[in-house]
Length: 299
Image 1 (cartoon, rainbow, N blue to C red):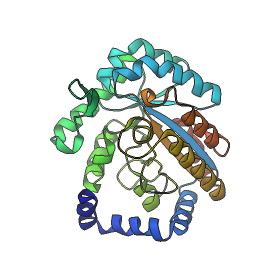
Image 2 (cartoon, helix red, strand yellow):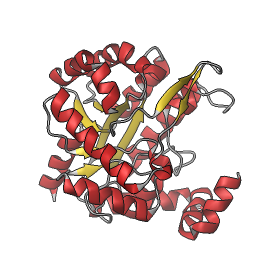
Image 3 (cartoon, helix red, strand yellow):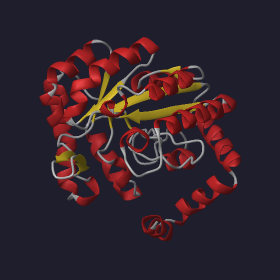
Image 4 (cartoon, rainbow, N blue to C red):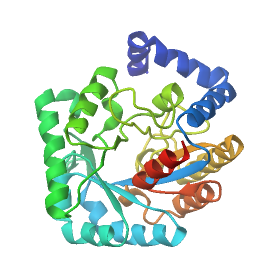
């Protein structure tokens, strides 16, 4: 609660959107649809990315990938470079069967706490010197080129929810512009309602992650609904939110469902695959490169 209070005091615009999400959600979604049209979207798109932040993901991601392909999804993978090296054979197989890869930095940003028996987060960009962040982004780019032989075009910041200040995003986009990247997908849903599902305010096209229908400014993430304890959410709640999201976007008839999950959270969760099926019933599945190409051609 105190974190939200401090954020509201520091950013009155965020507070205004938070209040509008509670008091006038319909109006907020109408604004989103209008911004989507101005961004060049003429239909509904669906992108699913998978953040592979632990070694546990390496063991299950091929199974998840195969099932997603069967459903018709165009999966995108965000893997820290150190983990990409550890799972090189697995991730190369995903790339060769159609998976898109984006830069997710180089350094592992999760570690297993043996005492607690759970993963903990580390290596937050907002707590590091800017030059250290820059070097991590560059190292992640170099790793994708070396290990998979690809030229990355997009990026997602590790723990991106903690790196949302405008000056942080301008810095991030400056580094990505040096690399000639075509997009970033490192922002919270707030930015989608502020500037649209794709915008270039900070330097290069930014594609915010999508939120929930019941709480539009909060992400619909796999950790909260499938892996976390003590948060009061369940896989069934994820499916319920997913169905509501599908219905909301169906009524809008324009926009982007840009969701991400961790493979180790969802690989045996039928509620997740049922949710994906709901989204596929209303939106056209693409990866980021296809999305940029199609939106560009529609303008």
